[in-house]
Length: 116
Image (tube, rainbow, N blue to C red):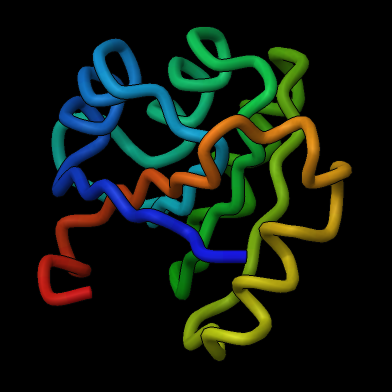
């Protein structure tokens, strides 16, 4: 299965992208300026409830942010950096039957991944 990627370089940009160009999967860093990746994931999940969210972080503060999201009723999967590409793809495709995804597009939000 081919995955199409759309990129945003901040959480706020990712939310705006989700409003106008829905995607099936979200891969986002956690620590970002303006809006952290978990807050962006919450807002994107509210816009796109079937979107599979995977957070990627190498920062120790991610645990506290995840607990805050959990307290609000949101549970997201998190992978520790560095993430091998095959592990990321397997994680994206593991949770739901592929038939639920319309266009196999991946939203990527991270200020550090501008070259991805």
